[in-house]
Image (cartoon, rainbow, N blue to C red; front, side, top):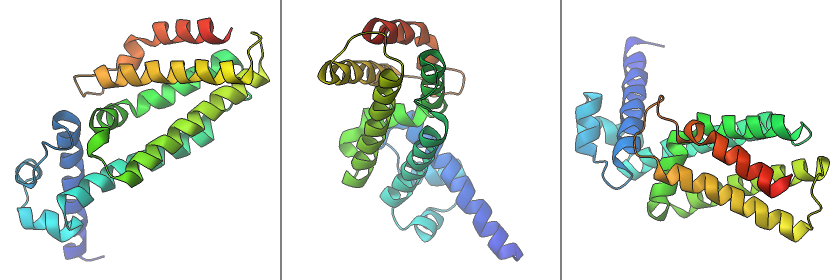
Length: 191
């Protein structure tokens, strides 16, 4: 790879990093190419050269993060583990992706159908993992319907916490702050 290709790669990475920061802090609609160029220290033309449109750039960031989240859920959230261990892994994975999930849930109405479908698929995966864990470690006599009602309630509470997030830093985690409440809710619903 030559110097020119290295510079293109570095510019693209800088644009991605700056845009993600702007996306998290300002929201999908409020991110402008002018702001991206200013924070990235590149010309606006560079953004269009690398990504075509602002929406392409934003969707690239969100899609990449959702793909990573889906992979980590499939690899690390094992429904055969004990309930406590499973719940810990479940909340840890969501915590790692808390910032982008929070922004996605806040801005879901502005996102493309493909991204909304990906988010729905991730939720289905999470619900199925929860159901399988409950089925593998039964303690409460719940029907399948009641199990899914409780699962929906638990996922809804997690989403509410993510939507309420206001400060997007690695040190401000609503899921860590409210972990005790989520664990208590989980135990109330399923144990």
